[in-house]
Image: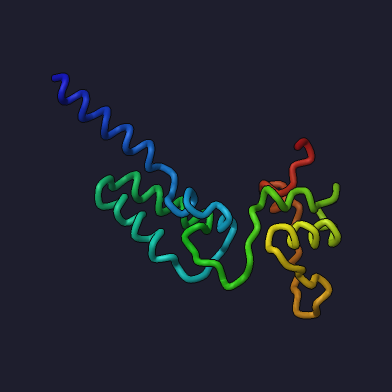
Length: 138
């Protein structure tokens, strides 16, 4: 009986540890991507999770797809969402000077924010409120 309890405990611990997606753990800066090419390494790690533990592996795969961490970057630079919070004003609009300074610090070079090729996509207040970027209480 003790062996069965140990085996059950080990399976429970392994399933709990693998609940978070591999891409989310390995590449937190990729969170928030919507689509792109799938990173084969992250997909392989998630597949190994499915192979050994079906339910936690499927959950890990779902977490990676939901967060967007399974996708390779699109050749663009990425900055962790937590760092971008400091560049927003009270209305949730980016302050270009603060954003330029953050990008210079994080990326190591100046990003031309006045370039005509730069696209700004509007975000509605519901999306902003549900994101981790804007939190008035923080």
